[in-house]
Image (cartoon, rainbow, N blue to C red; front, side, top):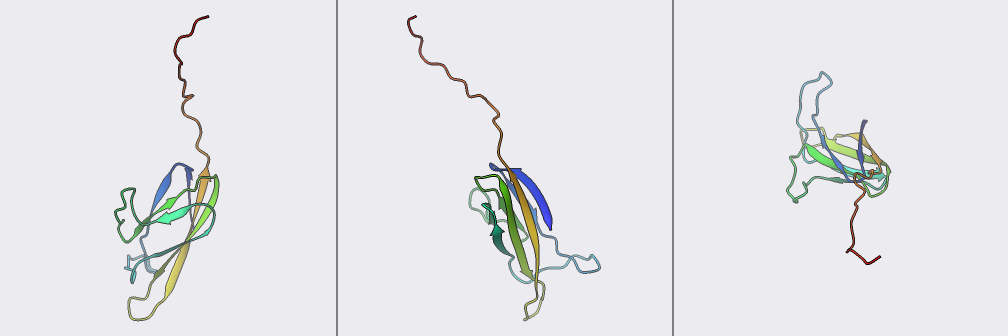
Amino acid sequence: MLEVSCTNEEKVKIGLSPVTPGGKPVPLDGPIALSVQSGDGTAAQVDKDGNPLPANEFYAVSGDNPGDTTILVSADADLGAGVETISDIVLLHVAGAKAQSLGLSAGSPELK
């Protein structure tokens, strides 16, 4: 499980680097699958302009409300004709964004 944190105005880029039991890098067979198991957040495989991310990356995107989002990440580890699904979890902790400015403004002058 990977735990990451952000505010409800942010997202976090997640990268996959699959390895063998001996720790050697290995490719996956096909695209990754993303599924939100709980929470208000989402998972996105495109950037803010709609351009696709590399096959081994995605964004864990916060929802509007503080709280946790659980994302299931799955992929096919069998490089042949069969399917051997491996999976892991991303737990996104979302905090409410805090005020940064008071946003003061002035009206027009008025007679006393």
